[in-house]
Length: 232
Length: 232
DNA sequence: ATCTTGAAAAATGAATACAATTTGCTACGC
DNA sequence: GCGTAGCAAATTGTATTCATTTTTCAAGAT
Image 1 (cartoon, rainbow over the protein chains, first blue to last red):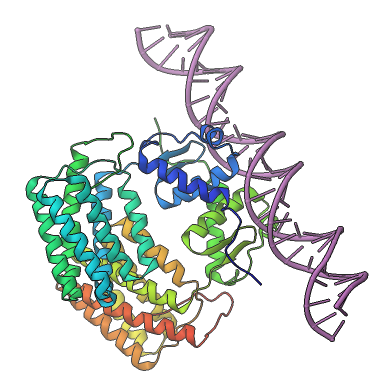
Image 2: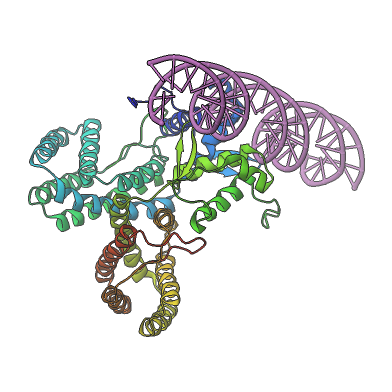
């Protein structure tokens, strides 16, 4: 009775959801625009059936707006959406922090600390892109340490919607410095395994992210093709 | 340019997702069992295409397990899932409470208070079913007052997964009394518009719900057809 | 008796075909 | 010139068909 992994490839509709999701994140499919059903079928060399299944799923995720008889459009992130989403993200990040504090091993903490100080270097040198990368890694490690797949899924879903706004955060120096300081507080709270304090820091951190993102959207920054959305 | 509502009926796949979702909640489709594709098509008098679109969506929601080439099965709620889901629900409820405190009008508060005292009567009389109904209404009013659709959606999704476990909570008298006491704390925090305190109460309240539900699952209660899942 | 083996039947995955709706465009009226 | 009616093309919704995989089950081997 071997069950050594399924040698079967994933169903088409799954692969398609993943690929179209990436097309949205990468900006290949632009917000507000119609998703060309036939074009995508030709491009992927498949029929409409599995493609449409994928569209339904992405619609349910909030990445597409499905207009009856009028096709699917890439959802656009409105400023109100940002105000809605970030508080929820904040509450979930706070929970992730609390759980992480309980379960974090010394080794994991050491890894986060290493990432943190590396990030501090990039902050000092004003290197935004690597700073963002490490920032994201730290948050992911906290989420992993929380060891709650349901929580991770919910956050992934919300992150996806935020990524609908494709921009490079235009942080003021002051806000960047503040973010870095918040990260120092995070590290301290983690080291002390002080879940309540970490939760608090993370909530404030997310509130500041909200402001950064809103400003970026308001300024109508970017939409440059291919660039991922980054923010802190 | 009238846009006075769309006179077009909802697409089939949407209606189907709703109906199948209800079939799962009502217990007509039992956890772990295969979802009979052809049977449902015959029953609804439709073809497989829209039905399968609905299944993909419900799979993505976590209500169905989609096994490649082996059909869809109604997801079963494992004890570990309960441990995962309730902390997330707790964090979200806490946020809902905080937001509600900020936005609640005097009128809305009065309505909640009325529901609360009505619920207290049912508690005193040991009338479980109406107690549950009012309990749910109160939580819904808080969620409405929070005025955050994204938050509401996330909570609805998690509630759905909890409802996979169809049982009638087998609360001990002690736990029921405790729940009622927590509701009194909630009302007090709401009246004082003390968001932090309400958040705290709600988190503890959800933690107790988690225990109640886990116990019910462990005891293998119910699965009686048609009865909705209730708990507090 | 229990365990394979191997079709036949059933179910699923994907493609194609058909129906209904929307969109685009042209021609016409005012 | 502007707006509108109406038809053709394109697009979407649904059904049907075909291909592939899984399941079932009975016959045969050990």
